[in-house]
Length: 485
Image 1: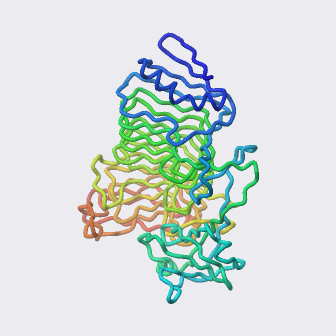
Image 2 (image 1 turned 180 degrees about the vertical axis):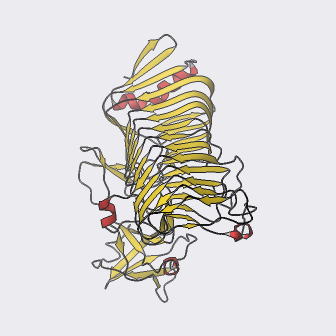
Image 3 (image 1 turned 90 degrees about the horizontal axis):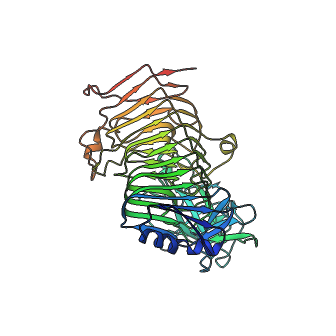
């Protein structure tokens, strides 16, 4: 039975068992209905399994409300709904409390995909894989690199050195894109139906906490560990929330198949001293209309396992700060800033990215990994009101082709890049702010003029850089950028 302790206007809910955890949503609702302004949930060490949207706050107008969830040693895991195998499921070991990776290692195809004659939407790639009949590969998928996306297709069979798959989904990037960009051969990852040990738990739901259309004082998650969930949505979804603070401190997020924390028109999000490791998509997403986000002093390790272009940290909000973080190993980009040129900047996206270290480890660089081409450790989209990238250390970045250090793409505007150190970028520019005058003429473009308002100065790098400044734009400048030998 969940324990409730009263202290003045505050309520302490103690969770010491799975039954306590199952009863938590109802007990929390009762506290809020009673008008309590301070609720603290304290977890004892242990494993707790949550269902879809285990905690959901919607339509609250409680500007004085303070809700905290705390628990060193408490591990929260997605429940197994018992619906059988799905390629979207995640897995965790209940003994080690570590995520279990069930995909095969990344490999390089011997050639680009070829159509199979007289078989509709069927393609094949040459590979070094043992023969497997259609019955043996039932339920298997292949993740195939296509430019800046990892396309997922069902495997039909593997025969005589050829892997056959069916194109059921169109991804907007051609299967032969990488022939055009750098003539690099595609990479692929096989996703077989796993054979699991008894200690491996199936994670079959996605969302733990949803806060939607609320005005509240503070929400705080501290010391909790989340291991494994199912693909789809976000583990923590914050939508249209006004708050003094939504804080995540000292938590760990491991092996998550969905996005981890998403703030969409949510104010006051703060993520500090957390660890994000072996997650598949974005760890933190600060989307349009979100204000005053702070992402400070976190560690992001070996994320982007889905082989997609989802940046580890995405910032498209207003007055965001990303500072003092360590980001190591990723698929396409460590940070994604600004908004795409086809989107209208309704809120004025702006912020500061400073004093972060971004790199790829020696082990990551020494093996073929599920990485994509045409990216940047710090990737900047076209639309910005004022984005400042300063005093960061970006180093030891590798990839198949065109993997830059700092990359301002598609005629990016109103970007300041200063005081950064960018070293050992193996196959791309250290700093790349490329010319793209035609961005305003592209289909559905919302940018009136590209390559304006950019200032690039006091940066140090040891390789090639491409820094373009418009001569007809007095607000742009480039100076004191030094290449060392």
